[in-house]
Image (tube, rainbow, N blue to C red; front, side):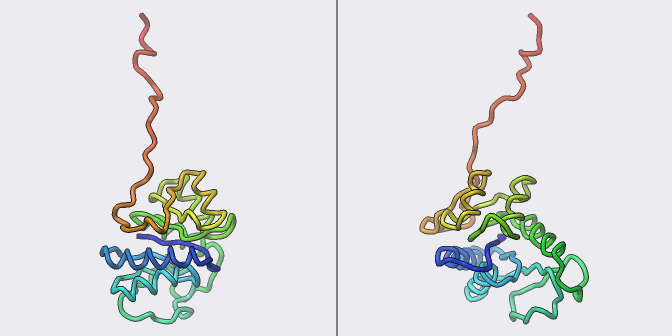
Length: 180
């Protein structure tokens, strides 16, 4: 279960991230996140405190991160000793979205890594995206682009989250092509 979100959190964003971490542990999911301050670390701490496991995808050197103890596995697409670079952060965001069975966004602005990764996920369909309805202007815009809204007060289970189903319209009807 993937979790993304802003580094600077509102009370709603923090509560949402914490709830996702707790539910991931309770339901037996590995929480996938980016180990950044804010939503990532909030969800990771909640998950670990509840006895869960975390896969932390890093955009920089492993030496920049303090070991969090049992239950954490660090993942890096390229060298463990390479310094932070913007392209590595973008790769990290893509990996988080692609690795999750579902991705949840705790909070987002209209710019930044959470926004760009989530918007790209919606375009490419890596994983169903669920966003905190009270997660700021980025989450509101992501809902208009097709993300699934989630109310914190209704977030009881990650397994039960289902993408909104839109009725399919036929694009082609065979009889349209047959001459009478």
